[in-house]
Length: 289
Image (cartoon, rainbow, N blue to C red):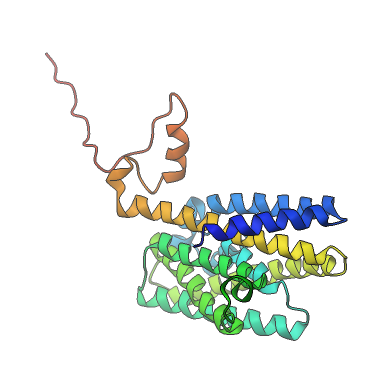
């Protein structure tokens, strides 16, 4: 069912855009969202090389910095938060929903990391992608219009997906191999950094949405933007399932999940050799005659 939804939404979105008197501004916004969706497949919210080294040896301030950067470059988190923010019209609502999300991801981020609970990162990120699809679909009133049911309680869903997002962060952190000394302080610092990054992103989102809310094109803009949220979520979902296949069935691909993105590029470039495989035995040195 999921693959059908973005096709329908894109068709409706294009029709709305063509009817709008603000075609240029709406089209530019959609292009930006499309680029963001494509970028999301490459970035998601993994821990990259330099940050991995810092997380192994860094102190609380370095953890705080990485937490902020991680949030600001974690496009799956940002897309979900954009969906949450879209129709919130006053400060009290924003505080309520963001607090629910923050409590959710803080509980699992700290709790799962300290207790060593983890799961396959690609599967967790696939669920996070579903959270993006859900929020865009909910914002389009899809549950009533296309399924004929009442939507789930929004605040409860935001809290639940907050738990999932935090679990994703915890799994990524554990994959690095964190030091045991001062771990609680480091995790709290990382979480503070995440919140700082989140606040910065929310301010930018609120400003953008408020700007468009005052324009006549807000209704078509909101439909198109949330349609692209669904689209971006589907792209992320398929991307993470593909990554999971590399982990679950490495022999089917012939190269590693770790260097998965680079190896995919290299396989299409003449003269470039894919990364190390799982089933290749090392070559024996040539015997001297």
